[in-house]
Picture 1 (tube, rainbow, N blue to C red):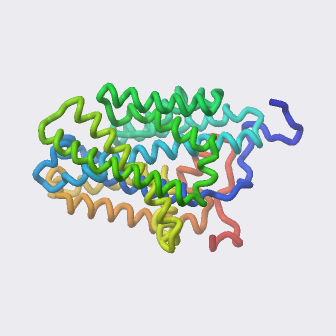
Picture 2: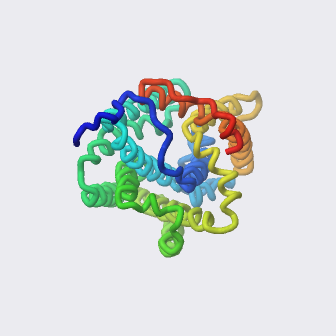
Picture 3: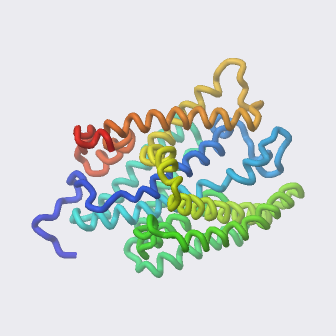
Length: 349
């Protein structure tokens, strides 16, 4: 790659993006964040809900295993890979060594994740994202896009064949998201209608028998077979969710979805970390034992946390360009402090 005299170095602060922000990504990220918190409420409070999720349990939490657990982290993982490639495209236009910038970004995320893991909650996902990003996602940027797409398929299929689910699917989901961006799917996301409609119908049609089989195998303690079915059902439901949201964004409900989810999505890192602290504080209220929380209590706690975060996120983003953790992440990535406060002309945006 040739070096142009006007090109910034990799340590330069980011310029305002020339391309319009893809609102659908913020909505999807905020939507996924809501589901992830709902699934994590009891684990954050140090309650092992695995048996409840698998078998349905006796406290009304069976619906978590059907509609929430393993259904939202695939969306978040896909979006991470997708956003990574979007950022690479931008950095290739303005930095001499764009992959150095991305490597530093992942290393900073690793540091944040390690603090989150060892100080607050061992279930942290940021550490895994950072490591997989460094080991799989960053090296994949030297591969042609067809190879990235093929490798994504392999890395998704192998865990399913071996009866695994959960974080072992993250590398494949990262590469799938990256491939979607490199094939131009992300750029067309805002205008797509027929694609999400057809794919969403297919995902939903396949998800119904997969979820039914998950329930049956869970009741029979199906072991590795259950794990595979659980993972497949999760991916199918996640796909249906994504397509459903994209379709709703093409309807008059778009302003509502943007109002509710976009601020949460734009401050996803801040809100993800903040939710852990809030749930830990709530779980330690004297006399309120998290292991006895019913499904209604779990929903109310999640709704309260997310509602408060939505209000704070909206207030913050009317005054500042980035969430506080997003701002620090950018500062450490580019090694220079980016502007935080909005100008008067942007307060209404």
